[in-house]
Length: 345
Image (cartoon, rainbow, N blue to C red):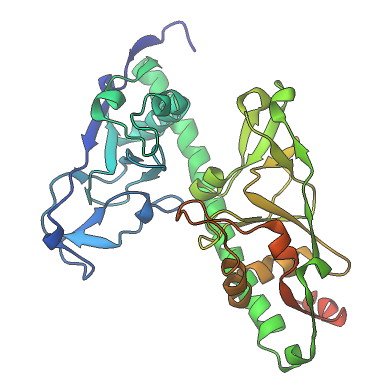
């Protein structure tokens, strides 16, 4: 922090608009009225996708606002507003008082103090953050020129992350198409052997306690990082409190938590050791099976149907698939020659 930074409150630089739910009878899915955001159900990797509309909008966000979840287990999750939205009581909209060009500085400030803000949330099972808690958040505030410079740097980085996210989405679509063409939509598939998933992949469980390495910077593949930007967070070991799995080269991560929401990730090396949440299953392809094949298999509809059918747990927000269930799952085993064919693509 610079010597000229001043202590202050968040509402000194931010306009905070708390949501208000419209009357239920005014809500519809026929795209009549203003698009409505009630919470993280509509949130995406960057911008939300509205599922409902209302003719009785009470509170609004505007383009470039920070959309902030203020209720429930996803309190603190954020998205960017790409248009005018009606916001329900599960969402707050925040914007910098000096203009939208400062929005990346404002988000960075909120991110930096997010743990402190969440610790102040009321309610143990379903935490809530009030307008007063947001407004009174203590923070260090630099002069406007520094805020502008910081926002410019962070904006360029955020744009690059969004480009990478879009590229990942394109590659996922290509992987699905190639897998469908080569391994599903071919008459020879019916003649393949039936085996177990453990014949094509092993699951690594090598764990680490990051805070035993307080000064080491880890590439942390977490569920929130996937949901927000599909890019790992760089975090020092001292800030990572729970055990994690080590992420080796040549693996695919698939979330065992709430698997009906697909979270499939090929990690990449960006310097330093990589770790992931223990909510991921770390899959390493065996023998002649390739990383690409495993990645495509995870995206295929037959795999998704079988994988989600093995869910355990009664809570809608904490259902999981056990590693041993995945390894014992029946799957078709393509012959080695098919992997020579796919290399021609």
